[in-house]
Image (tube, rainbow, N blue to C red; front, side, top):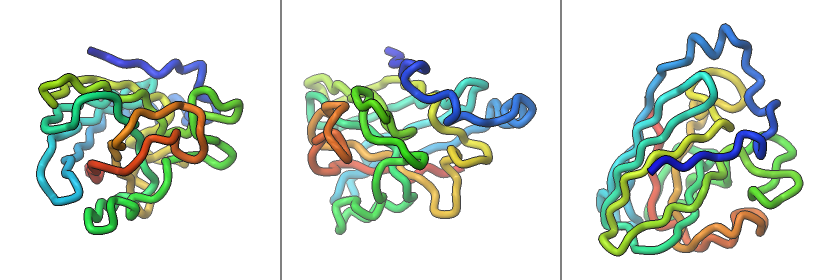
Length: 176
């Protein structure tokens, strides 16, 4: 299954990269390994830069069934003892609010909910136009990095600052 974030929902200015810079970044890759708060491995994500954004391929296991908020967070630290608050808030460019239903949203790191089947196994691809693996203000590789966070509940795409998506149940630092 491939989930697309409607590029029309994300301000075109969030990808203010020149064509030449984008061409150089196209094909760049990154990865992330998910763990729960106890440190138990829960799967991986493979990221690939395209000329329109980043494609994320998830391969997860042991995730509780049902909907889960899924976001890119602003800091590349996943401390389970701190319940992943070390990952900071959602990855956002100045002035953005959370949610696809917000007039000032979404954050660059906002993504559609993950819908996990009863098996707890999820293999899914998600495309996000709001971030890059290259340079610039939308780069996931700024000075303090970035992380994925999976939340306990589904994101309502509206509530501030995180969509009322509950506790952080899994985290993965994004690395080159």
